[in-house]
Image 1: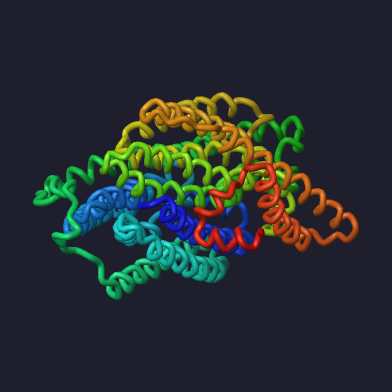
Image 2: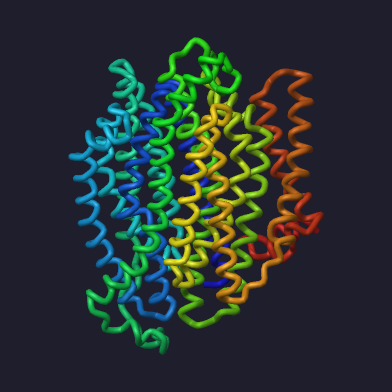
Length: 549
């Protein structure tokens, strides 16, 4: 897969991912207004536990399957690529039924362990969804391995649209029964969206004529090692590839649940201390002086799980799609032993990721309060978390991009080891920070930043040593950050001036953010953060260059 094709595929997935995340962010606005931060805490806690379980059957599958399919497809072994899909689908589906049973029958035990009995109903509502999502994940991986990003992109958007509509309607319908019931209704929307996304993939597969037979003229001599593989050998290859990815992904899913458990364990005492000393200014909760401890804790957890992570995950999801697009491409180059191509693609992937990460981090930091006021007008708390936590986007981006490169290189165990080390440090940081009332909810935000910084450093150092990759960080990261800072200063100043003249925060925010996009492109080109080569590599880039001339 060429650099042009990587970028095209990455941009298709990125557009779909951002669209999906924006839809996800938008539908959570009415849901938050319906169930509040307390309901958000219930919904998000149950959802994170569900994510942990499907990590073992679904989340690592697209990257793993796309890698194996790409290795075979790139050398013309189309039938072997299709066999990988069939075997993976059979294995993952059986595993997903087992995990769904655990989620359903173990819901009460999980809720008790998480010290929140309200989680039982939402957990059971999510159990059937895990099977559907797993089948969809394997199918997406197959399409991506063939270099076809469109099916994944379309199904993502359709899935999120149905999820949004169903979640809001069901939350509204069940709110009269209580917050727990409304949160459960929202989780049912996740399943409805998954069904819609899977149906779209089925329709695309039936309408497409995908190559599944080997043609002599297409076979590469490197394809011989894939011809005549036994089912056991293929399954072994799948497990060898997917297990490190699953472990790496599950580590962070586990950590998210550990965050929730530690917050539920330590925050009540910290809040009691703050209330006793009447230091309400330490709590980013409106009218906290009129609330009891449990409501304050749920509000803080809801801000972190339901608002902060939702907004942070919009740019993070976009960057993750670049890493996903990189994995099969680099895998194909490794299959041909073309290390020069691997180095070239690695540099391009890291730079492309930073071009998105830098303005996202700066923008969310500067516009944190206006964004919260626009999106969550009735309950605008949470801006402080964004201000302190947005810098983590830079480190998350580096960690995800380098993980994608390592997985493409066949070094799946390396990012797993690095993730384990980073997450141990995060838990230790959580424990230390949660001893101080002044830090309270910000503990998990700061520990996340430290965690991904360490993860990114470990990954980057390994890649540099393994393939002798020379990275020009001034060009790859510093210049995009400088361009983003210039963009931020000008656009935020415009916002403040306009809002001072005529207080109309929402309109000025939209105008300022639109201006920021243009400013970033202009400043980036002027200081060399965005080069002519970068623009040429973008699909349609030649037309852009003609317009600039």
